[in-house]
Amino acid sequence: MKLRRIVDELGLEVRCAPRNLDQEVNGAYISDLLSDVIANAHQGDVWITLQLHENTVAVAAMKGLAGIIIINGRVPEEKTTERAAQENIPIMLSNLSAFGLAGELHRLGIGGKR
Image 1 (cartoon, rainbow, N blue to C red):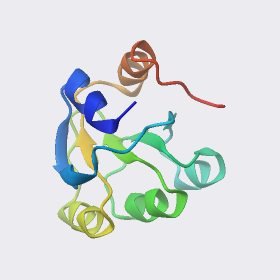
Image 2 (image 1 turned 180 degrees about the vertical axis):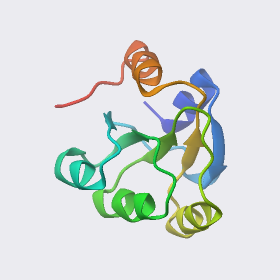
Image 3 (image 1 turned 135 degrees about the vertical axis):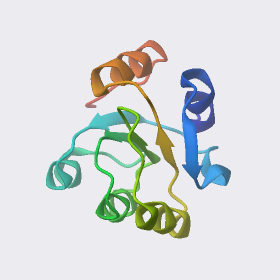
């Protein structure tokens, strides 16, 4: 499924890299620990987190993630958004909790561990 469809279906706010929403999302990973994402997320996953700092962008770029969804109505730091724009990694915002967002992604056919 294209990232753009997820944004549209779930009403996510795109904070940066809107031109990179036509990539395929292969799955989702939820974690707030960078080391856990490094160890367990897969290329093409969308990352669900409440982390706001720019190190999330470095991890997403290193792992080849489709994008970062920040939950609970939180807003990323300006440095984070700037870095994501440079790396062309979409950052999207949701008012849902991690559990709620995971349920919505599952409803759309996006799974977790493969």
